Image 1 (cartoon, rainbow, N blue to C red):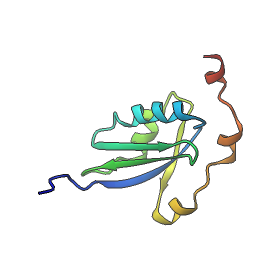
Image 2 (image 1 turned 90 degrees about the horizontal axis):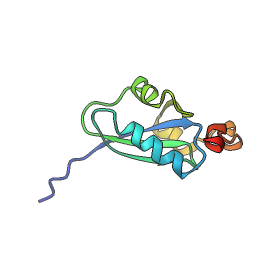
Image 3 (image 1 turned 45 degrees about the vertical axis):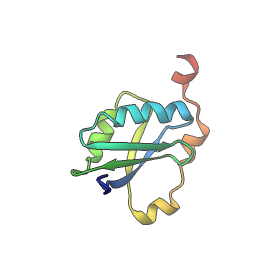
Image 4 (image 1 turned 90 degrees about the vertical axis):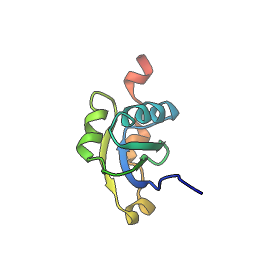
Length: 102
């Protein structure tokens, strides 16, 4: 008998990611939001896939936990946008100065 719960998934566009370290930091930050079960961050695509059980996290919560970092939550993407979304060019081209010095 399979007792594993089905999760609901949402995808959020995140600006400012450039590498695998960014993915790890964002996963750690997002994991602090109540109700989130699993997160998969893809810096090359500029997105985070969030799996939750009951209550969908609000975009304000996502923005709040990323506050004080070099990252910002742009918006949740609907199914159509997930297929066509492209990482903002600004995120691709600009290195983070805090990453270089700090």
